[in-house]
Length: 287
Ligand code: PAF
Image 1 (cartoon, rainbow, N blue to C red):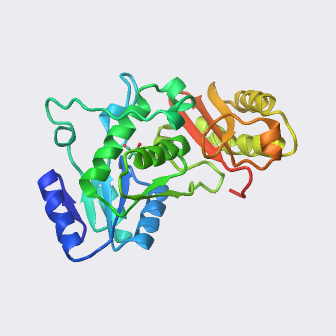
Image 2 (tube, rainbow, N blue to C red):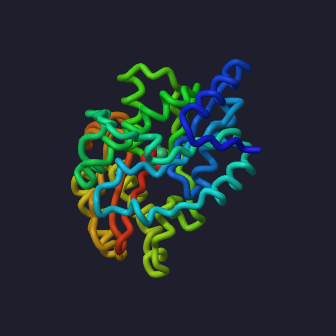
């Protein structure tokens, strides 16, 4: 049976009982509306720990006014049933007042990997993510915490946060889980109309092709531009970015660095109607 806790004092009691029993704790932070991508992260956490805690909190501070906070899908009962079937022990589901009590006045700013890409289009986003993730890690004090590679820049920001603040947790990135047609699983896919759902998988094909082209000697900037045009031709309505970056630092790469074997990631964000999709691939691996 999964134990659901909604207050910090209940969470601390539960965590300290597990600690006293000498159990390793794994945390999977989520905003709920769970799909197989999240459950794969839960499976990774259970391979690295004896107690898997999942947080379910739709974090208001990572949404800008006018974004989808109010319509973000919520299904706590459904999420609980899925988590129970994967052996989760603890569900940490605070309400916003518990997480951000009156007078809350602290925010965590990570520089470095948070520059550019998502920040150019959602400037509020990583401040909200870094603050809530720092809180979640300090609340649960897990041995390991698992985050999806689907949000690749977020994963790099969290790795930087944990290193810079000396938070004693091992961060593990879980591979992106895809639908059979290649679309990366995301809670926001539920917003897609039938027509947009048919267009969405082309993002993965286009960033795969961009990766192949740059590995074959293509100029990174020209390849990014061509991939942006290909997304528009496929039916995406607005392109936020296609970017070929160093996979560790997220800095731009030259063709000389590609040839020298630098780790690479191709990342994209684009809009279909009111839905914004992001995806990324490692062109040096089969994914
Ligand atoms: O990736 C997410 O679902 C969220 O950004 C996270 C890490 C749970 C923080 O709210």
